[in-house]
Amino acid sequence: MKRYFGVIVLFVGVLVASVMFYRKLSAQTHEAERKADLARIQKEYLERAGWMRSNPDDKGYREEVVPFFKAYFEQIATHQNRYGGNKEFDTYLQEVERQVESGKEDRADDRKAFYQYTRKVFDTLRNGRYHPEWTATDKGMRLDVVSSDVVMVLGKPQVRLQLALWGAQRELKEDGKLKKMVTSASFDTAWRLTDARGKLLGEMRGTDPSMKIDFPERFIAEFPPQMVLGHYDMDLVPSEVSKMDITFKVASRAASGGIASATYTWKLDVPGEWRLGAGEKWEGATEEERPEEEIDPAKASAKQ
Image (cartoon, rainbow, N blue to C red; front, side, top):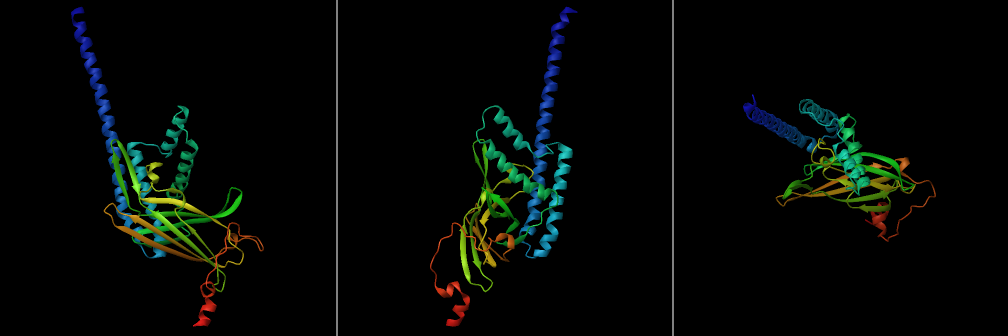
């Protein structure tokens, strides 16, 4: 029996190595299939999203947007049931926590904040609660004002205009082993405030939104692709302001060099909760001289 011992040990060793190799190969194959299936789902999503981005019918868009996302997330659920995955969608958060524990993360609070910001929108889309307050489409991109709640920012009430931009141009760039998605979406936003007669009372300007997230999939891989998130925190306006025009201009450069310059103008009657109380001062405002006819349309008409 002893003379066979070496052969048996060798045979067992080869068998164990073969099993381990097979398991590793199976795991790699499974992971490759999982990634390919997720890529397929997102590709099909982008093919269907073209209509959602460009549909000029406001009512039609609102009727279709919830079923559109419902179909996408049903595919995600089927994908996870087949290939596994984190059904809590918090893989990024877990990685941040691991790095904190190992002492390798010094921006944990910022990274968690961006994840939570993305997660809030993700849950709204996934749970069928995406009902934009205002929407418009131009140059193949759609801009949604998702909500306009009054929130406290540093102890001061402000109107938070929550935005979602669909379809900005982006490009995956590789630098060695690193891959980075670069999204082109530059904002230039202007507010025009008038009274009930159309007299100009004030103007404001802004560039890129706060908490601008141009690649939400960085935080949640299953986030619907090609969206840009962010918000503007707007000071409450003087009590005399009755109407407001908000013009959002978005420039997006394609990898081929062309630029899509989209303009979206939201004209609205100012809600009462957006206004300061009577006699309250509009902090931070500066005075500027303008021609009388530019300020008051009635006087401009009288001169004609």
